[in-house]
Image (cartoon, rainbow, N blue to C red; front, side, top):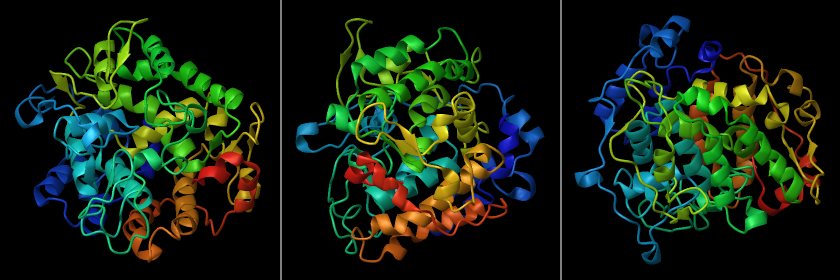
Length: 437
């Protein structure tokens, strides 16, 4: 199935990174180019034969080993002193092991390098998410653009640009523009009062849904009922539930797809990974046994003897879109923009045809390149308005992100989306509280 998405890869993406991330180390770029290059040396332009080869790479214990000793030994955060930890357990663990700055405030380039080095995330997905988070929740106009993986901070250098008009929110303050309702282990913001702390009931549900002694792709498939149940929970209990296109449709599934894909431990027996429950607990700062689990916020850690995805099998945008669509084909609501209209059980979806003035429709969103085309085009359409009042020069702040999106859309044959009818958002109180894209 994933072969069908080879056409939606970010074509020749690394060429754009020289502009979008001028501080990326030359050696890092060269290494990633060697790993990711497809035909004619164009990164990510993999055909079906390459995808098949990608899945047959096997296990290399030297190349895939992730250090948790020396400079990467676990060091607990000092939250009282201002260290930032937030809703993403994977980023929290990277800060606790020195792959990101220990204070949790990181340049976008460092985030890209850390997630590729530790988890085997492909640079297309890593760089896009880092640049998006920087523009919306960090500081895209500082000398070293980046963001806080937790709450607000105005740290000079990374978050001290002269063209930003307010303190960057960090990921904890990113509700509906990056973080969204229906999270796997975090509560809906307007139900629990926070969106960064693990909810033990949800963790237990995830824990119970993980199949033992099963390859990671099959573990992910088995999470569908849990994913669907969390969506239903938000509909049934959260009057402010809102599910936007980017934060909801595209990012919320990461809480279900990323752990099996990138937190599972790879081995000769399980070259595609197996997420055993001890590893799962370690990455989510949980100890103890079912029924008596203990959660220690901010203490996420990479387990010893951890092995990332194989070199050449990095988790890319096509891989992630395929995982999203695997669940959406079983429940099409997972691709719908919508939410509750002020009371529980009032979920109302937006007609995609009306919203896009006929350019897209719900029946074909899961076909071909349409999901990527629509999501990226929607960011282009809505971001300038959402970031007005955040930056003095919104065009400058969005420059790098939009260059990446333009590169991502080039050659895909996307229909031309000129504008969307945002008046539909007015029926959702959850949008009114936080906006969203």
